[in-house]
Image (cartoon, rainbow, N blue to C red):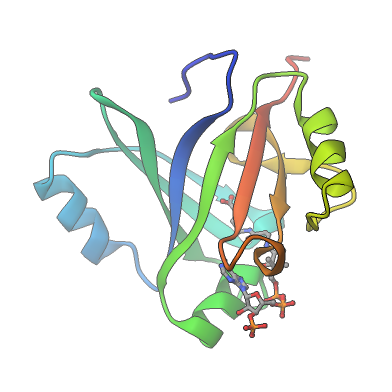
Length: 144
Ligand code: CMX
């Protein structure tokens, strides 16, 4: 689901949904195949990934499993819809990139990366410092 690259690449678009069914049906008609479904308890969501062999960018439906979580809050406040863009950072670069972003005046949501879906280390750039777009940075966690 991820292509190794030495550059930062756009990996997926996260979409907050009340139920995944309607968009799942649409993506299927558009030729996307459903891939991994994974609960990320720490983030209060069940993630549903869709992709095609031709495109490296995936679509991620974020289904709320924690009514107190950030995605539930997002839907209450703004309604369902596009929630974040996620960029894949080559292994070993995330911490330095986060430091660079903070030094450049961007606000990160976490002081240090957390564990996310697909065995990734993740952090987010707060939308208040990006012109209204929540940006996820994710780096494959080192194999143990
Ligand atoms: N996109 C754009 N704007 C957003 C947003 C989003 N996804 N989420 C919140 N905002 C807006 C709020 O509406 C609010 O706008 P106004 O000031 O105009 O009302 C503003 O950002 C600040 O909101 P806040 O009250 O300070 O903060 P929230 O409690 O709403 O939390 C955020 C915002 C980004 C800190 C929180 O959503 C967060 O920690 N996100 C990172 C984790 C996450 O999103 N996880 C889900 C995905 C996990 C996955 O893909 O696995």
